[in-house]
Image (cartoon, rainbow, N blue to C red; front, top):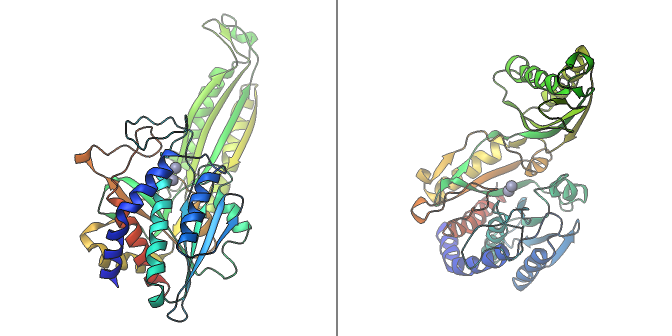
Length: 394
Ligand SMILES: [Zn+2]
Ligand SMILES: [Zn+2]
């Protein structure tokens, strides 16, 4: 079956490049993926599959195997693009000003369509069933994954496991990456306002200086990571924005706002650390006579790759690609909404290499020059088909 899938992937490769160009040139923002969803529906219907809408612009379809009972495996791709102006002279560059497929979700969607096309052609030898899931809104809270789960995507029939594939521009095209266990971080957004009392910069004793207090607060909060977090448990606390509501060289402002991100890989600690941040914030500003407003916006949970599922898929990837083309991934402190699935059912999120320095393709995701080596589409479609063909038998 490996050779059959590899040759089918080769046959459909040129067609997939065209599909990817269409999606890439017509990117749509999170939860507005109407055109992309329609393209997906048309493609699947041409393959003879019945499509269903879910949570607005989400699409799913089922491939029923003809070789007897087996597991129900879901394959998930995300549909949305980012609010970035693409910088590209390629003919397939974004035609939507200010919107760009800068996270490779065009690639995930195309590769899943390709995998579906392969699986439909071999479905007489396929056991169980494959649920194809095209999910909206990965890049925006509350995350399309959480909405799809609420809408029942993992039920009727019950999904035994879910597989997601994501581009990785730090891995060369022709290679893929796997990691068992903890893989990606939870993420929460922090919004803090320090309220003081403004006045003349020459008379600080008549003011409550929110600038000096905010500076102290940021330093104190770093103690959370350096002294309170378990050294073996990754924790990141970064503040990326600080603003006062006015002020000048000789004017102390009334308030200062600070924005940051908290990331970790353990739900108990995640809850504890938020309480700690609140305590340090209020105690620090109180000591200097100020008050603080703290708002924490909860983001995605941590992503855990099921040990048994991921171990098995890793071996199948070794078989399909050659073990020398399968890398072990490090923990990645970014977040993804695929994490929600991993909290519900055995899940595996692996990486598709898309880098090719010889072709000048090396930009990171979420940058305006991101692109992929399209040779990766053949691997992306073929490997996903092969992994799911194997996973239904397990
Ligand atoms: Zn992204
Ligand atoms: Zn992404």
